[in-house]
Length: 261
Image (cartoon, rainbow, N blue to C red; front, side):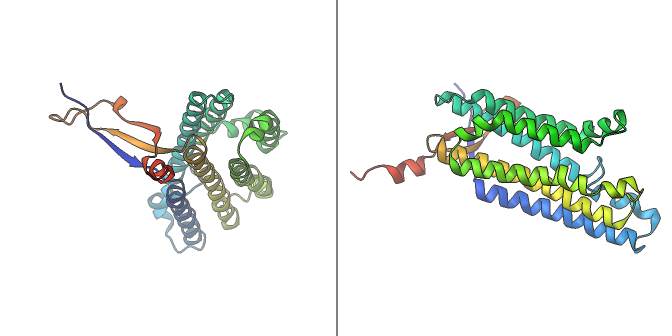
């Protein structure tokens, strides 16, 4: 009987976060350079379409695609953490799932722009006011869950949240002056956009790092691995279900902890 070949690729918390931060930083820097070239008239007007994909404020851009992937990946990883916690007798599995669903909703908003719809429907109040209220209510709801987490995980979660909200709501609120005075098409505003988008991406990356570290350190010494199904040995084919992100025992860690014979 043919058996499926499996390949396990370790996903390390620190190295994964470092690589993602490099990508986020490169995207933010590219955006800033493009804006300087554009608003100082170094770049011809008819060439804008060639660099529009680097504008972090555009939905059809590389930065938006990357941010969407980050948020969606964070959501899936959070739900996975909840399932691992449930299998380990955890009582907060529903909170993990709710938090993960929130990240998936944010990934949808990154492309669909739900928060911009709020500005269209409610002219008198900017969406950042509703965003701040949502953050406040979420903090109250998740206080018991946060208190249940190990101190290190809790600190990393709070840091990630502060960075993300600081960019998504804080910087956005700080640039309301530009929107109210029709200054959106200026170099100053677009440089602030680089700061805002980088803080959002960095916040999600810090959260992903916290999740990976929590799974590795707190959930029974498990390590997160990317499992790649290569299908049958003869054909090398497989279905999408053959691929999964899951936690498996870290044999190297078990050997280090095992008492000497």
